[in-house]
Length: 393
Image 1: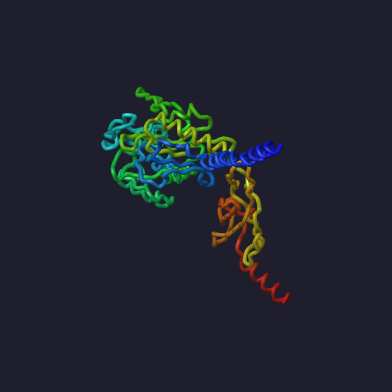
Image 2: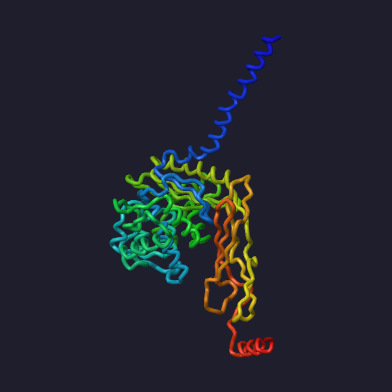
């Protein structure tokens, strides 16, 4: 009996010893859940579009060649011109000798050939046409070099730290570089500026330009993920021998939009496979929540010299945030400020900003407007107010 008891005690002492490594392996598996992402890429970046929340990053600040992903910056400047009414979709643009001489991907524009801005944009977004990109660069910048200067200025404005453009196409130059992080910033700005107009084109798999002419030309999208991954509706591929295979992709599922970037992949097949895995990870691990709906009164301020003197500040858009599934982040702090100093304030006009910090460190920022029009007091209002204050005092 004593021997039996000793054996049982010995077995009981061994059980915890065997259980510890199993628990450690489970913990390590959770901690290293992203280790299998973008293993072949020189750099990668995965972010949520609305907030910019980083979901995954690998060598995201390394300076690398972007190839035709460069054209995202060019498209951003084009859409800005469109939305400022400095450029119109049906404007006809002429092809210079320099633009027509571009190599690489092209739609074979001839010298002095004219084509609409819309067809030029379709050529850039769908077929990654270098000749069409340079035509638009010269139209907006005056010269190709003038446009590149605008590109670099915009990059600084967006907060890009490791980007320098030498041309508008992405054709190789040792001094033409960017990073996966900066590509994410540019993609985010492009989607915000271009909106549905842009995504309708970037999500088009094939289309035609010069449709009404004898020189009808078929465009086929360089982004094959449009047919391989549900929810993908953009954004830009890239390849040169020096840059290797690159892509910036955006996809949307259940109101959650992600932006994914890989650079320096050995092949387009590997590039697409690793992007799919990154998107799978993002959509499986994170979800988007609505913190404050649009047109919600977030604060009422009292001002002495306005009519009315009670100003109801409302959110201009939905304020959303991204969090890991299974967690319940809560609001930690909120800052509301009026940035516009001069009256009047009109509904729909951005007059202030709100910043919300969640307890998981996530920061949400949004624009504020007013619920009703706010005017400065006129002379009669000031007189009546003075009289009222006098008698009350």
